[in-house]
Length: 257
Image 1 (cartoon, rainbow, N blue to C red):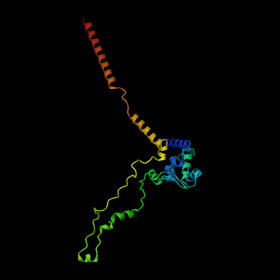
Image 2 (cartoon, one colour):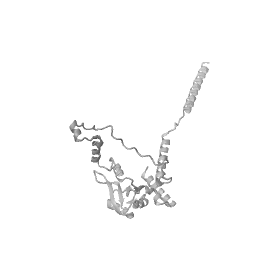
Image 3 (cartoon, rainbow, N blue to C red):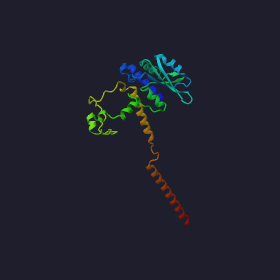
Image 4 (cartoon, rainbow, N blue to C red):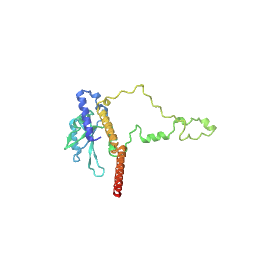
């Protein structure tokens, strides 16, 4: 989907919510209430971080301006990530600056669900999610067997006979991973407010399905000459040749007489 189509879909969803009087908690913006970052694309290559600060600071105090630059040349790549101190400022920036013109170019402003993941994807890097424990702690836990694997021995038992050898490196009697808890109710969870019909995500899915249907229809090319037409054409040619041969034969017979 092109950037212009995404801009129009976002603007259409925002206008529909404004006319319908939908509350902030039920808006499609509520899906990104955990993230204070926004994405700005289509930026002029001559703009700097200070220029972006002057433009986007109209809707709140910025705490981070991360403009993407080429690693080799250091020149801007035309997009940036910006973070607001108040997450509600991202809603104002998306609704007012998405589709607007800055330095003569139309920019695209969207919410960012996961800033580090999106930044790594655009940079062509592999994103690794952060875990609660560090890699060294996880490695140590994997190498050390549980305390139950070492049987306790008293001093008398040690004097009576030699101690048993160390436990196997990977004992088979270790407990497996805990089972995942099932859903408390058999009924499926209710749809989120931003996934309701008419939201920006429903419009995006509908646009994708229409595009896929058009591509499938365009891939089927009808045969301009069906088999029946080609067969009839061959029959007409054969009849014409037979008529010409018969006319020549009649002409020869007339000459001989």
